[in-house]
Amino acid sequence: MANLQTTLPANPSAKWGAFIIRYGLALVLVWIGILKFTPYEAAGIEPLAANSPFLSWALRMSGADAFSKMLGFIEIAIGLLIAARAFSAKLSAFGSAGAIITFVITLTLMLSTPGVIQTGYSFPFISAIPGQFLVKDIVLLGASVWTYGEAMHAVRTSTAINLN
Image (cartoon, rainbow, N blue to C red; front, side, top):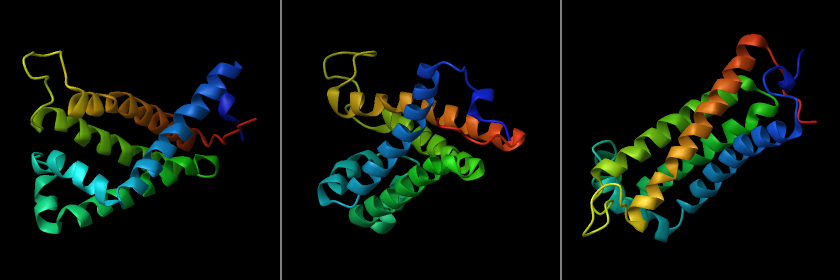
């Protein structure tokens, strides 16, 4: 089998960058997922979900605590699947697809959440919370698209990963 160098430039910064993108994304998802099991995180996401056309129904059906825990479970699972790339490109691609969906939905909160635009200003002046909190998900979405593309390329070409 070929190694990851067939899909990435051979220079060390590209290899380290790929490693940080994949496993940093996985770490962020697992970490944020774990936090979803705390009361303060459930309280924090409630106003975001309450205004979302994609999430408000689930929040109403389950309540803030159960909704937060459900999201936490999903985020942890997605993060672990992305991290599985070392032994399964298919699992990592599946997790990356889940991350893409997660971050697309999260970015829609910028359109539905009151207070994204700083009071007294107009676009592009976003508030610290929730505006800047949400806009960083553009980068996480990009990382998810990259990990999906790399893993799917490996699936199609049976490329094993080599982190050396």
